[in-house]
Amino acid sequence: MGTDGTGLHNPEVETRDPADQRARDAARYPEQIAYLFERSGFYRDKLGAAGFGDAASVGGLDAIAALPFTEKDELRRSQADHPPLGSHAAADWDEILRIYSTSGTSGDPCFIAITTHDLGVWTEISARSYAACGIRHGRRVVHNYGAGPFVAGAVTDTLTRAGVTHIPVGTGNTERFVNALRKMSADALLATPSFALYLVDWLEARDIDPATLGIARMALAGEPGGGDPVIRGRIERAFACRTNEAMGIGDVSVSLWGECDEQAGMHFSGRDFVHAELIDPETGSALPFEDGAQGELVYTALRREGMPLLRFRSRDHVTVNARPCSCGRTSVRVRCIGRTDDMLIVRGVNLFPTALRAIVNRFAPHVGEVIQIRPTARGVKQEPPLPVHVELAPGIDPPAGLAERIEAAIRSDLIVAAKVTLVAHNSLPRSEYKSKLVDYSDAG
Image (tube, rainbow, N blue to C red; front, side, top):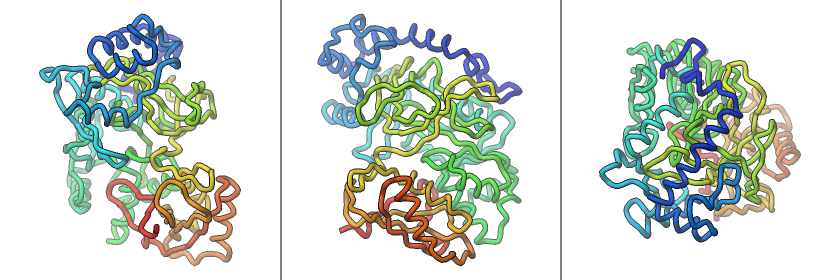
């Protein structure tokens, strides 16, 4: 499929009536369950232990909430006990096209095997996501996603499928990245929000106006923050461009959600291939995708061969936008609040660092976009007040009481006591990949 004049990669799918989509998914789901029983020892055992002896006993898609979740640690144990790919691998070696690895930031790395069919699914889903973000045929895109061990390397396959002229630069050399933007007259780039902010500072430190690079579109992905109005505003003003947010998860798809020009959340792009659920992260109970709902995303593969997943807990916590969209896409939209892996517990209160950053960002233009939480103890559980370093905006002499007002807003909105320290602009670490919002270097 190619993009049409409205920017839809696959109009027939992306504008489909949700009830029709549900019926299609319900028809495909039993076939995938039968595949799991036939090809996956992991799921035969897991479902059997839960009282489901065969595919028929599992029931239809409407009964999916009765099935057990799949946790990331289970996949790690599966690969440790049945090396190298684990008992959840459902394809033979001669069917496997490529094997990626996770970064291992939240535990031992996991290997992700895909077949030729799976790569086609990934690139179709991701092409829809990027098209929503304005990354489509006719664009000249520079990116620094490496073609190394991580799933992000499959971005090049996606851009090829979408007919995008793409210039992969690799990581670790910002000067080469900027030279590629200039010499190739690129008009779009893919980046993490952290790298985009880093790039603004890097250019301005060298007296280069970011707007002179000619970037019209930027797709921000890889970490929460691309939809934060302050972060987005800084990037858009600097580059005089439009930014849109995308989100994927390596175990499921390179990119799975993409934001259109309404900039009101990311559209689900996995129709026909992935079923998404919303659950209460504490109880595990199902939640409807109603406007304003908050919960954790859970994914089930509907068409996956290599390593199909059933009710996989993403640990991504989102807010739902279920309102109709002017772009014509009929899928639900979400904005990511944060990840469980990053969460702190401050005297019984769950705190996402990205939520705290969003509170601080309200105090622009006095503050910049970079903060860092400096816990005094290692681990998830913290005692108040939580130390937070907040960068001031460039050239700003902070007004009296600014730190105290930020502390009061954090306490009012997040029910967490914090101790805010204002620091000079550019004094906190920058990243060419993902920002480090929590730094344990001061912890005992």
